[in-house]
Length: 160
Image (cartoon, rainbow, N blue to C red; front, side, top):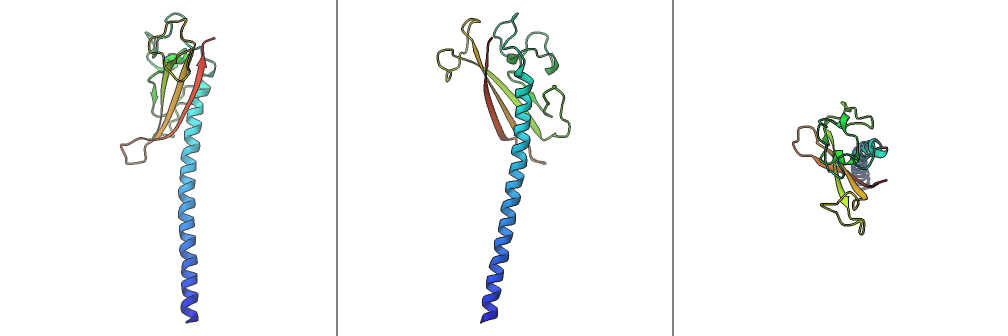
């Protein structure tokens, strides 16, 4: 009887330890993915930090201006609307080749000057004073065709 009870207690302890190790391993995997995604989103934010709101020549045009065919030619925040990088890029616009299963997607929207929760679809140069920049970082597990959103980061860029 004592041997059976001791075996049950030890068995439950071992089972609990195995479950704990599994949970910690899953949390570690999630933490690694989140840390990488945060870094990639911050790379885009740092890249755009010193850029002007929009191109003085073309106004508040969302997306690349005429003749801008690559990210190295983007010269204002609004050029990045619709931009997707796979492999992702760093703050110097260089591809990070060691992360082929990651991508950064950027959306820029005009914000109403009277209500930051509303977008302005057709602002004039004088009306549009804010852009909302949204960077979504996604991960594609090896062997999968589906991208999983890991981090979404948003910030406002003011017209100076």
